[in-house]
Length: 305
Image (cartoon, rainbow, N blue to C red):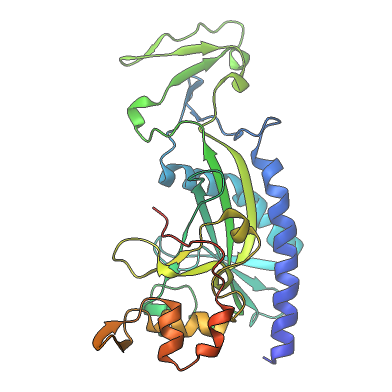
């Protein structure tokens, strides 16, 4: 595909994705900014609250917005292919119905605010399919078949930072009960709290920010988690929403080359061999000190916890 055609498809897709992301806050929130999900319900109309554990919240958020994603894809004349296995990349593949060579990768990334200005994600592997771009191991389609790789970012504030499932509550809501139903006082050994309205139940998260970003534009030069081969994002929330990452003034080709070589390329520094794990060192290794001024450094990009 010609570069001009590729850029045309990318520009159109990103424009629509940006508009879609802006609509999602109202979809998932109550009038006061709380998450409209209060818990899950059983046949006895008991409401079981959820913990703020990030894995639980992220999965329920994905389920919550998935019908909207399907409608969005249909509205822009794309079909969606889901990742066949849980650990495959990406979460969603968008394929243009009129030209199936046009594919976009979309990962849904959710995280909570560490404070009023920082949050962070992991952005996928920099090994395996990232390096062997014509292979389909652990990826829905080979990496080089995608015209672009995007994140739908979801940032929220925890109402209660407890991740302990034993701290969750059981409620019965008067509004949901029919006239002849008697309130339940216990489920097993657990007390059931009676409330008048669903809105009386405190949501575990609130104050959402949704944004769309091309993956390389929000990447940092640090790994995202522990010893795994994951790319870390930048952590400043404004920079995330504005795609103002460390590579954003340099271009995707430098993001690709850096992360393909991260921790593998070696340079001599102060007379000692050293694995290259910073973009500054990588540019010096490549003899491109002229590009150091293009590294975006206005924010300290720490690894997300």
